Length: 248
Image 1: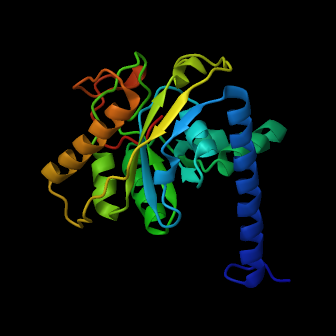
Image 2 (image 1 turned 30 degrees about the vertical axis):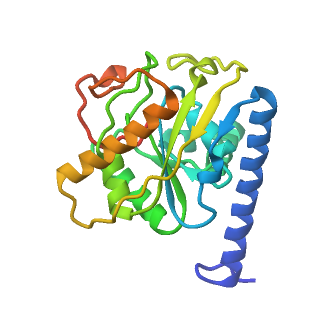
């Protein structure tokens, strides 16, 4: 049977791979629920079909995996490309893990990486997939909710897809921002009602800022965090003012 691009054989191989990834994702979600007994609300707001955007606060390295495992539909977050490039048995296992949970590699060392990531997310939403974005851009190391970068507003307006705000609580107790140690702790995932924005091909800056502000207000209500009216930055990138906010 031919497996060339576009043939039935190729489609079957792709379908088998997607089915395998979905089995791993669902199994991982069951393990998360069994070990951590999380409090989860609002998953009924996730659309049963069509593209959607998950916009969440960010407290822990594990946040993407937790959302990806718990949500009823796959949610693709961008992850460091090096997670997919390691060699050997461990490297293959890591690649399968991240791919199964919906992570997509992105080169964050490239100056244009955040912009390319946003366009990539937009294409995935338009194809009917669920994607995830952290408007703060990086993890909060003091537990407060920082100002959202306008990339999330651009994504919402560029696609017109529903935005599901998410408030995570307690995930920093599973793994602190600057620690490799993972602990079994309970946490909370609260998904809010979808926010809808009219699709705009040409977006005034004010429209992006207004959409971002509305999304951040919804996240704050769900997470209960103290808010900070300034951008967050990775420790090595103080002063970074990029408006992407795909997370890290």
